[in-house]
Image (cartoon, rainbow, N blue to C red; front, side, top):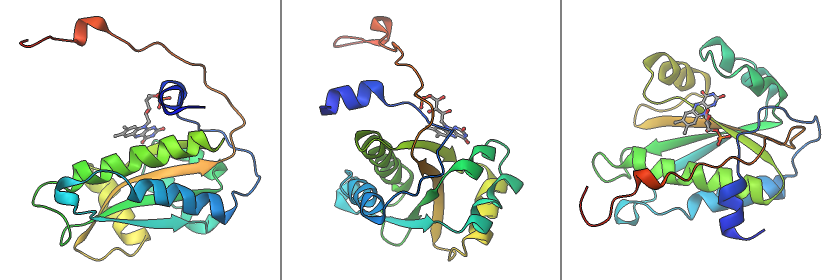
Length: 168
Ligand SMILES: Cc1cc2nc3c(=O)[nH]c(=O)nc-3n(C[C@H](O)[C@H](O)[C@H](O)COP(=O)(O)O)c2cc1C
């Protein structure tokens, strides 16, 4: 599939087969994340690859929309190091990295879903404690990853009325 088809057909996947995701595939997702654009090319991201079932099972205890992580083979915690980021920019930089990971997963026949952590204090604190993050590192989101057992349909989201030419 080409890049445009990939973007137009990506959907969140929340049901996964028990098949393991090979490490080469995980490395490819992380590489895609690290190729995202960032302010001043600061690349302030870190990624925690979470494969331990006991850790994954802790997530729904502080996150009410993450029960499906129980089916995921792994999750990637996308984090920002505030010491590497341009002031006020890490959320933007790491969001670009997260989207690259979602698109790469889709391109490789994997399913993935963004599990939001920012800006909810309970989720931020929960992720900080569970994954042992240092104070200067901020969790953005978890991305649940696995081989999909569902194929959410393509949807049409193009809204011509949201497009403005030259002025609003
Ligand atoms: C910032 C952000 C936070 C999200 N948080 C969650 C979440 O906590 N749980 C979840 O199941 N999906 C979450 N999602 C996925 C959205 O629900 C999903 O992208 C949206 O419904 C559109 O569906 P699609 O991804 O299939 O196109 C999040 C997506 C974004 C961008």
